[in-house]
Image (cartoon, rainbow, N blue to C red; front, side, top):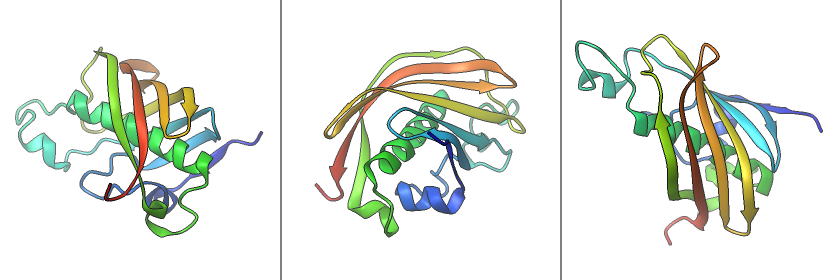
Length: 154
């Protein structure tokens, strides 16, 4: 099966997140129902760096996990055929659990975060993933998480 690459506008059609909380710039190597790699260019102008930490800016670990989840949301939405219309067809992907989160190295402005997501299970509205984040081919974070697909507003 051919791998799919998604640009910024395609991501906007697949997940409801918007700036400043849209944390991925593109998705590469998406294999429906299997895996995807999200790409995040970490820039010094992101709002969280003003307070985390002013003299040594570090991307918060929770935002790295959120970027993994947004990549997984693109994988789910693309696999399920959502996003063929605008605004993700009224579907949202919510965290159900975050397990085994580990943070190995700080992520700083100027770095490129590669978010590797693999589907472990997916049935109906509940999906489970394994994810890890790399900078310069070095793992900086990893976790196992699950997500639930729900209709917006419910």
